[in-house]
Image (cartoon, rainbow, N blue to C red; front, top):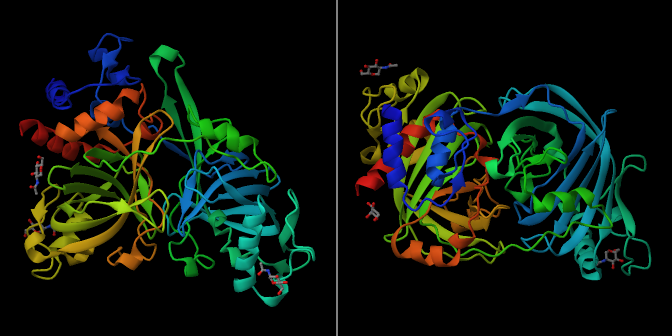
Length: 514
Ligand SMILES: *[C@@H]1O[C@H](CO)[C@@H](O)[C@H](O)[C@H]1NC(C)=O
Ligand SMILES: *[C@@H]1O[C@H](CO)[C@@H](O)[C@H](O)[C@H]1NC(C)=O
Ligand SMILES: *[C@@H]1O[C@H](CO)[C@@H](O)[C@H](O)[C@H]1NC(C)=O
């Protein structure tokens, strides 16, 4: 009963319920089964969390099949691309990478056709839950989609590749639509891909997950299976990417027959080939209105290797922010290790010149608190040098201690005060939910503490689970919320760990009290 009471409290706190939801959960018994309820997003998310994880890892991963991007992807650089990869039972694969000039993936420049063979090896020792693989490239071909794209790309290859690659195009170097040029051939022992910063090391770390996407009752469709293929991450430093062996993942590809719904981009990408690159549907640009509550859509992996979920609150009125970073030891975020609460201020953003569609912000972290969640972390913090991480020797499982007065916590790599140069983007998902993309962390484990280290790509998206209040809210309501439909990226909501609950509850109740 207590649980219900708290949730009722929250229900009041999350005012302005705007989602007509039924719960595909075991909690429906509290309500009349099948009854539709006005349900605020945070509330739904909390309930969903309490149901526990719905994700399962497919071990060993089954690669066979056709896997596609679900939208426009951004790689460090930036590079804007979509991917469509086919893996066959005989271990051969054929992969398309479609590159674009713009962050909406509407203006294609060139496409790569990559053929080769991949072989799964053992479970990764570095990235828990991942499987290592060997791959071998047979051929890489390139098709240019405009004269300009060809000139630019050839100039890049000319500048950065060896002599023999300079004339890889035939003598008459005018653009021939549809012509495919060989960049790499194992047989001919030719490889001119490095000039493009191209490598397929993403195939050396794989993970497959599946889960059930709950569907809306109105559509009466029950739930739907979704399968995701995680491939290795791309190094954020361009000069490292050709050598880097992944320890984290990119945003997952989804199985072409078992993808999330709706996914307007999926069918377009599925049907595309090197001569018909996918041109994605236009999305309206959303302004950088950060105010509100945002939460991870999934258990996230950071290279080298941390599992975590993030939960942020941005207060637009005084430009202050709060963040909860819940760390785990396992890839499904079930075994908590420690939580960091951090807060500070941020500046007004301006458009990024380096990354079209992005907004640059500067974040100051001034306060931090740490809660160890297991004995190993307690022991580590207890034994840290005096004055380097809160009150030495007073750490206990589940008890939060302030580390602001010790300028952070050396043992956990937290230094205060701290400034980060950030890249943000706000996006609409396929169902009119609002996503927040925060810049990718440098792969080398450092932080973007100078303008030159500002990210050029993004981490996995956060979901807006509660909107702003006050004037900003009225502005957003007038302009955007009208379009918020019935779903909030429900597939992405699939799983959030129990560990997140107390802090969400705390934050929500705090807000309610204010
Ligand atoms: C690339 O190099 C080749 C051979 O040196 C030259 O003929 C060609 O004009 C160059 N192309 C560009 C776009 O710079
Ligand atoms: C900023 O405003 C929010 C909401 O009005 C409030 O909860 C928070 O304490 C304020 N933060 C600071 C640092 O003033
Ligand atoms: C950490 O120190 C506190 C206080 O001395 C003690 O109660 C606790 O048992 C210690 N924990 C570990 C794991 O060392």
